[in-house]
Amino acid sequence: MKRRLDALTRIGRLQALMHDLGRWRLHSLEGQQAGLNDDLKAVFEILDSDEVANGVHAGLVARRIRALQLRLDQLSASLTLTALAAIKPTKSKGSRLRARCEG
Image 1 (cartoon, rainbow, N blue to C red):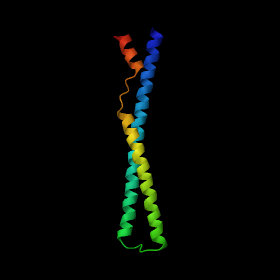
Image 2 (cartoon, rainbow, N blue to C red):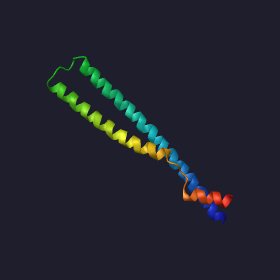
Image 3 (tube, rainbow, N blue to C red):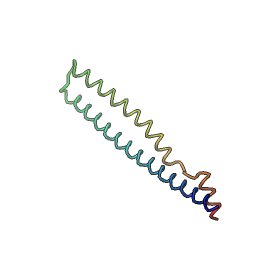
Image 4 (cartoon, one colour):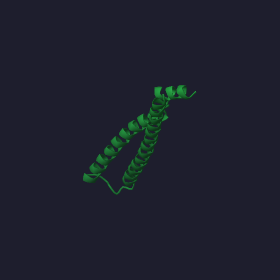
């Protein structure tokens, strides 16, 4: 019974570490999204300043906007999945068994 309790304790610690890793990933994704939003704002400010009128430069700017928007959409989807995983309760069968063994 002692070995089983030790194994369940290790599983619980591993689950806690995985939960922490999920929160770290969520924080990292939020930082990336903020950076991309800043880049997108900078591109639109350049467009508003009329420095890029038309031609090749306008095409490059439009291409950059599409690329940034695509990355933002991908990050948003990944952020949603990571946020859902981070708030998901970590109560598993192992932790329920451990609680039953201790109590």
